[in-house]
Length: 490
Image (cartoon, rainbow, N blue to C red; front, side, top):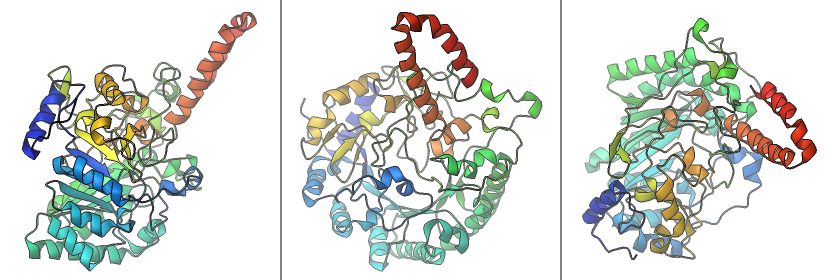
């Protein structure tokens, strides 16, 4: 089917209608997009997955070419209500050599830009252009003191604060609708500075402070996770919210950890990540990441670097024994089994916090396109649906892979592994925040290092099982192997 040349307003209505009806072949185009101009970065932050050996081994990707940008202009931008530059790879978009040219050209279209940046490549001209565009500017940082910020970013905190102040001055001068948001990744080394950051937001005119969790990528990062410091995390979040209310600062903090009394805490193995009753054999390989890494584990913002020192757990109980769950408002069924919700319960890579998986809208409403022209269903998925160098967006948008995803993504058995455990399920991209990083579920927060390992173990065990049962001698020893397996992993 050929995509109809709907007007901007009619495309929005048609897109919502086709999602509600569960259409597999769409006449409408996506209304939200993640876009990347470059996969390169000017920083080497301590919390970034770029420092991993697996990332450094990958070849550097080329920047978005003018030819590809021209295709975005004709095939996508006229119908977007909102687009985010960055967040779908590990690049700093302001580092792209053509950023200023591309961004200026995009202002002729109706969509509102969202910029995800460290802010270190801002200058007077760029700040004035961002303020004039009415963009949402997300400035990321991991410390409220120069020492902590420098230890992670290797840069000067005062410089970032001055940029934020000038953004506030410029948007007020222009009477612009631009908004400024600070995103703070919280972990053991910086959580005590959160109240100070609230004060900084008040002093600089920042509109909102969004606090997210660090998601460790490997064992050296495990004990920086606030999963192991839950009492302190809850205390700092509460203290910061009280101060924000006093100062009139808008703040979003993660859901509080639910710390059970010791006498009510189950044995760790009862809720352990290696329990075959909670993790289907051979299924949990994790979603492919949406940051340019074609890996088996998703990479999300706020991942801490190596930490050889493991701070003690201030709760005295294991992370898996706390039974924390994400917060949600439930699902309202509409149309063909789809659902609408302002905030739907979080789904973790291992199992959902509710009996039904949160509804995913992205195969109908959103698209992610990286600097190489690869088209992904969202920023959290590494699945390539097509490439703009080879096909038009119209051809990709309704190809067999997209139709299969739309047909199965909101069923009990999605066809693609990425969709089964995706953290963007239920997240409305028109909101200022949402998703797994506001979650307080230990299984989700430690998913990169626990669930991925568990999934690999069970995938291997599934193959061993198949090999044993295929041989007469193996069949005799299979019951013994099964008992040994359960003793080890239960």
